[in-house]
Each structure stands twice: as C-alpha cells, then as structure tokens.
Length: 118
Image 1 (tube, one colour):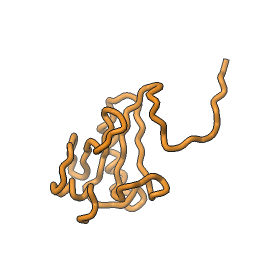
Image 2 (tube, rainbow, N blue to C red):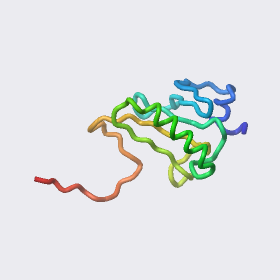
Image 3 (spheres, one colour):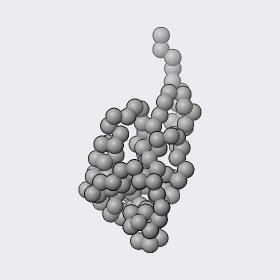
Image 4 (cartoon, rainbow, N blue to C red):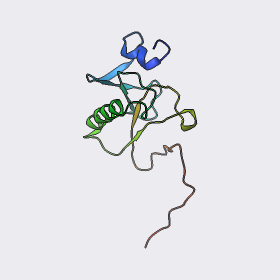
C-alpha cells in the first residue's frame, strides 16, 4: 500500500528510527513520542487493526511483550477505528512507559472517583 505510512517505512521508502526488527514486525520511535521510551510495534503485513487478522495481531503482541519484558510500568495501547482514536489504519501497538504521577492522561475516564481506604 503506497498510501500507508507504516508500509512505506517497512518497505524502506520512508525514514524511521527502527529500534527492533523481527521477521514479522518492527519497533520504531513515533514521530511525536508522548514520553521518553514511547515505541510503536508494527506488523510487516498490512492489516488495518487488531481484528482483521488474529494471527498477525498475536505475533505483533508477542513482539511487544518481548520488547517490554524487562521494563517498568507501561501502557500497551491499540485502537480500532477513528472514533477510538486510530489515525493510521495499519495495526500498531503503542508501548508507553509510565511513572507514578507522570500526568499523562489516558484517552478515557470512567467518571468514578476512588474512595480513600483507611
């Protein structure tokens, strides 16, 4: 797909900072990382989202888990559809390192407040 930025990166026609290359996926630094250490894990096969090809999604998740294995707290985020904040329609997993009170808000809020326990 020539209009897919991730396919262009995988084909070597677009620049990217590749931090890991597996037979079926790559890990890159996103153009605008939200925190230091933010990475994207992207399958080499073009699939739109995590529901399109279960095997591709599973292999991509395996790569992300392997990459994050020795790290600290982290969010793993993926989206399906524009309403769910998907902006590039090629499956990709965000690995977002976290620290307590880092101020980075997730894209949702339950509306509930925590009660203090004594």
